Image: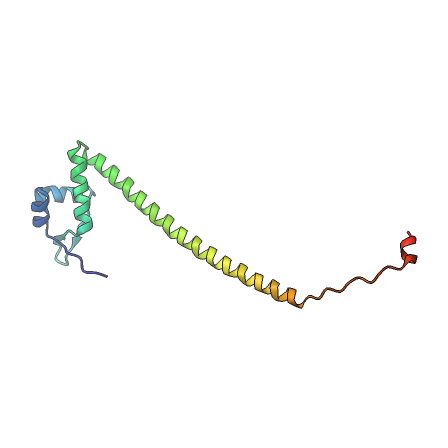
Length: 133
């Protein structure tokens, strides 16, 4: 796991031009969930910063916090669905690979069986059998 820069609420507030109380309110509203130190201090990573910038864009366009919460929830659900689809596609690819390997194995079995088969011509029928009926 790589090292991630974590920032204090004061730093993030100054960076985004927000009041620290606004960030606390966003957390209370469930819009953002900063990490916490063992002492309880909020720490914001890259994902939280990107989410806060997104919240700023939505509110700047006139969206209420309830609307922002709805949009973020839908986007989170969409992201989770896409991740699940990618996971299932990976399984499908693995299954297809195994099925292809199985089919390849079946072909080699059929090939080896056909090498063992010997064509035996039918004996000619006698005229006596043809006339009986």
